[in-house]
Image (cartoon, rainbow, N blue to C red; front, side, top):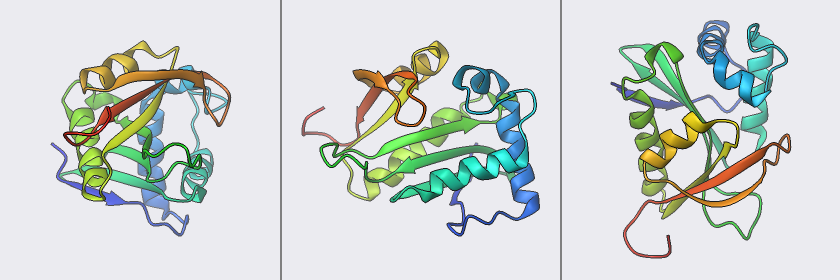
Amino acid sequence: MILNLLPLPPDRHLPGPLLTEITALYASNREFHALSGDFPDPDDIRPEQVARDLAHELATPHAEVLLARSEGRLIGIAAALARHPDPADPDPWIGLLMVDARLHGWGHGRRLAALVEDRLRAEGHTAVRLAVLDNNPKALAFWTALGYTTVAHRADHRLGRPCAVLRKQLTDGGPS
């Protein structure tokens, strides 16, 4: 299982070996990238593309990219947004949660999601949101199994893709 969760350095300069590890993690998730369209060729994800993607995540105010390691090996990555740019949205967001595809089904995704939720809860947040692409039923099943419920449908902010917006209450009491 995941032993530690470490924030990616905010300076946006990734050492070569770390960028290589993260690129391999992204490349292992070919099926997701084929659905998302985030990369021009899901069979050829390159370090410079991953570096741009991560820089975009880190350029967003209140964003944090977290690396999940087990026994020293990178097994997952998550991006969280502590404050949404829309002031009417009080909840933080999980923008990305990805586990090495060779480890799917081992519980690492559940553990990574729980660790991200724990961090948000410790920061005083009472709920969290995320968006799931409409063309990704596996992701929807994963998140709903973790207690997330659909609260809206809309296009994502980055590329205008149709999504379900899901929300999970992190603390007892308050609105769900």
